[in-house]
Image (cartoon, rainbow, N blue to C red; front, side):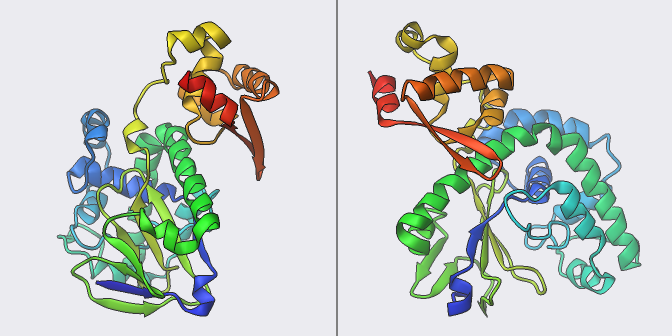
Length: 314
């Protein structure tokens, strides 16, 4: 059992973030069969062919491990807008001593890696970048849409009921007992969270596992399976003919798609439409009070109103 103690300083810093490189690591592990959700099968069939053509054998050896994968290859992100480029730059700045420590913990044959930790780090960083660029980045808008939706949902629960409500449905292997976050695992570790608090990272390739980052000096973090993984490779939502007849097919598709708040870009990707077309229809639906909107940073997210829900159910 891993015990993460919520100290007074740490309890006030429970937050969410997205990790492009964590998704990259998860994608590779899914291809290797270490992880796997049935919804990924069609993607894996194509990706497995592609990855065999890439010079990433050393990375596959590291990510084929069953217990520990290294944390430096996916440094905990600073927030929801962290980019793969920023994470890769941090990977390449990892001190060689840290690289050596973490590689020594990997339960896999790493004899193919350079003996020099700095050279091994740079090689693995280059291979991570290649896998990200070739296999994950083309699908990142689709992945990011669902990861952001998960964070929106969890953030609302955090506001409604605090960390106890957030953790209540995060994963069956994780729970809150008093001021301690308990993670079911064969590893036995107890650590007190400092002023950096706890970072919660949703992952679409994480299923069905929980992952815990707690090797110093990294920010303590928990990787958990995101909601909605079954929708990841699904096509555009199909509205009912009745609804389409009332508001038009595009507006009906938008209403159907907005089970979770989303912005114009995410909806355009999911429906295969231009952002301009989606924006025009969203504005019309909002003016009709079927949708509401709110600003989150630079993005405006839309969600159905009660009137919109009633129309969808009718």
